[in-house]
Length: 268
Ligand SMILES: C[S@@+](CC[C@H](N)C(=O)[O-])C[C@H]1O[C@@H](n2cnc3c(N)ncnc32)[C@H](O)[C@@H]1O
Image 1: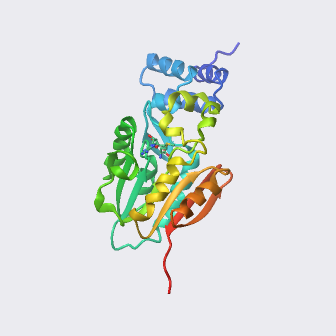
Image 2: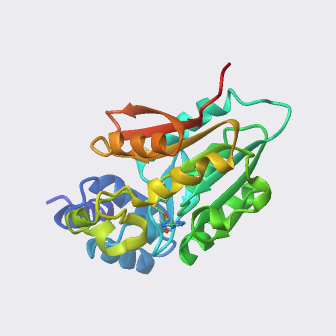
Image 3: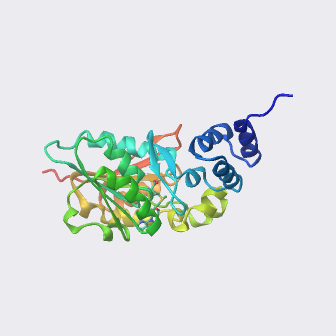
């Protein structure tokens, strides 16, 4: 009888625990462990349901390794669509000064960090209300020359950025409270509630982001808000209600919806 390799053994254990991409995850664990005991511990943690990214300490996002850790939202693959949209907008910005990028509700800071990697010249600020997220975001944002602030949405930002933000990124919590219990255990049990819960219709934080966006956006600046297919009309209404010109873009294959909002220009 053929002997199972350690990789096959691990993949079998992960599959039995419900991991869909068991072979890929087994390889990530094998590559990340520095010692057989560490590998055994990591496999056990994954079998117990800890997110893979929390175990190895990084997430693959936009082709880069972004630091993540316990208690921090794991950046999702669909959010790469928001970064792609933001990068397209950034190509339209004036080139004689650095683009001012703000990543609100930054979590690990992966969105702003990934966007900055695509820009020649930028000033990057990221904010989050949670201490664990801020500490993690510093690991991704500061090596790129950006700054991370802790606090409630815009309250955390330096005042001198008012009216100067070119690209305002927001993947804020947008899960309706009643749906949190239906989320996969990895999210429900291992990501903080404040990272997920968007209130009764999921749009409470987005409405607050939209309400003050015009105060912070530069002329020609754009707010980009990740949302879901069913919530996109509500997100667009929130942006329009805050006086922004709103439009929705989607990558249905990725399951990604983003509402963009810009300050209405007055024409005579
Ligand atoms: C869905 S997670 C997204 C994190 C990150 N933007 C990403 O896509 O990976 C939402 C984040 O918003 C933060 N958050 C929730 N309410 C906030 C608030 N009022 N002010 C600032 N950050 C907030 C949470 O701590 C969490 O890190």
